[in-house]
Image 1 (cartoon, rainbow, N blue to C red):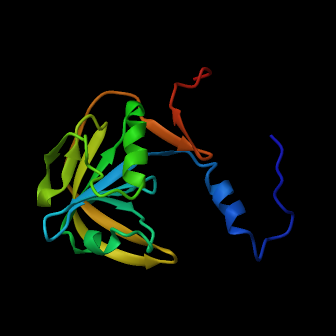
Image 2: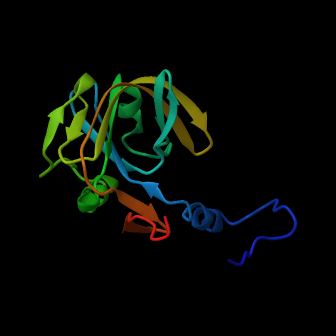
Length: 172
C-alpha cells in the first residue's frame, strides 16, 4: 500500500479532500426515526451512528446542523436507530432525500416515544434522548438504549461514496 500523505502536518486543507479521506472508513447505514411533538413521523439516513458505552447502554449519532428535521428531532424525547440490511439500500436513499412523506411504502411499528421501527432492519435500538452536544457543523445526539432487537441478515455498508455488501474475509 502506498501513501500520499504529506510529510509535514497539514494546517489547512480542502474539505472535499477531507470528506474523501473520511469516506475510506466503511460504516453501516442507519435510518434514525422519531416522532415530532405534533405527531409527525421523522426519518433521516445516518452513517454517523456509534456505540458509546455498554454500562450504561449509550449510543450516539451526529446530524448536520443544517438538517431540516433537526429542530423536531431535538424536541423528541425518544429516537430509534434502524440498522439497514443489504436489501434495504432503497430506504437509505428514500430517507436521505427531502420528501413530503419519507415513510411512504415503508412498513413500521411504533416504538418508545412513538419512534417508528422499520420492519426488516437488522437491529433496532429504541433510545431516550439524553443530551445534544454542539460539534462544529454537526451536533452529537447521545441516547440511552432502553430496548433493542436484532434479526439475521447481511448489513448494508457504505464505503468511498457507494453502497457495498459485507462478506467474510477469505484469509480469516
